Each structure stands twice: as C-alpha cells, then as structure tokens.
Image 1 (cartoon, rainbow over the protein chains, first blue to last red):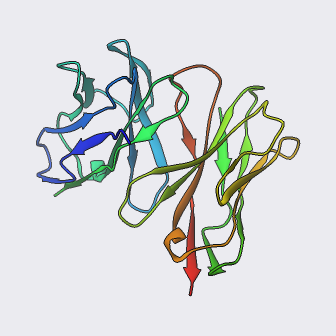
Image 2 (cartoon, rainbow over the protein chains, first blue to last red):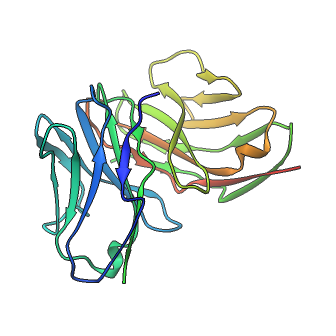
Amino acid sequence: EPEVTQTPSHQVTQMGQEVILRCVPISNHLYFYWYRQILGQKVEFLVSFYNNEISEKSEIFDDQFSVERPDGSNFTLKIRSTKLEDSAMYFCASSESGAFYTFGSGTRLTVV
Amino acid sequence: AQKITQTQPGMFVQEKEAVTLDCTYDTSDQSYGLFWYKQPSSGEMIFLIYQGSYDEQNATEGRYSLNFQKARKSANLVISASQLGDSAMYFCAMTPPGSARQLTFGSGTQLTVLP
C-alpha cells in the first residue's frame, strides 16, 4: 500500500535554530498538508498546499513557517527560528482528491 | 467554524466486547465529511472510517461502524469484538465542503482494551 514517508522520525534542535522537516507524499497525490500535535493535545491544522501554492493556512502558520515542494517529490516544512513551544509531533499528509488523507508516521520535534 | 467534541478522555473495554466512542460536532455547513482516526502509541495516524453528511446509510468498515445521527450532530464510532490491538487514542475529525479543506480534530479518546 502506498505510504507517506516522513524524515527524520525524531529531531532535536536548539532554540533559535532553523529546522526542515521532510515528507515524500504518495506519488499521484495533488494535495499536501502539515498538521502538528503538541504532546497530549489535539491535532491542529497548519497548512495545505495545492498546485505549488498554499491554499489554506491556520493562525499557527506565521512568518516563522514556510512550505516548499522543491523537486516534485518532496514536500518540506521549514521553521526558521525554533521556539520551545514548537516542540510537537508534525504530521505530513497527502490526498489525491482533497477529500481522503493519508498521513505519514510523523516527525517528533524537540526544541531544547 | 467547525467544532468537534469528544467528551470521553478515557474508556476501558473488555476484550471481545463492543465499545462506543462518542463524537458530537458543530457546523453551519450543509455538506461535510466526518472521519475517525486511530493513533497507537507509536504515533502514526491511521484512517478508520468516513461518513459523508449526505450518506443515508451508516458507514461500516470491518469491525468499525459509524453511528451517524445528523439531527443530533453526532457521529459515534462503534468497535465490535474489541481486540487488545485496538488500545489506542481515537480521534474524530471533520472537513467542510470543497477540496483541500482542513481537518478539524476533536481532543481524542484513549481506549484501553482489557484482557
């Protein structure tokens, strides 16, 4: 069964450092998403991406965040200057039609 | 704005018994989608079942069924014949109409299946 692949599975970074989370969506999918889940809390939408541009973003997705699809296969989330409160599980998801999602297994980001 | 409420932070069920996980939602949209996801301790999000707001039949997927009561705005998940591997966090979620729309999640229910 096709999978959404996220790397790394766990990343530890110093506060103030830039971090890039990587995702390889399912190859024929057109819609891409990032969500995050702070430990013990609900899953929150960050951003959706379609046709090489952001289609929706939440208030969490401020100027510190950016997304890119640099080479037609990877989909990345960059956090420019990490804060302690950015520590969370980050999920990438993709969808063929924009209706049903396949989630990746997540990247656990720890900011110290 | 859409809102999902899961009022059971934790549930216990005996192996082989059925369990119902509650989910209520609030939306002003006439068209929407309702989802249930399972998150085991390993962390991944596993899609379980989907119900469209215009679907007249309740959705079923193997041991999972969705008890959809539109007038009450509830979309409860029923797991029949619980297995130890069903122990996990379960999230109810919904999307508004249109493509590439965000999922709004509830706070989740931690299900523990007892041997």
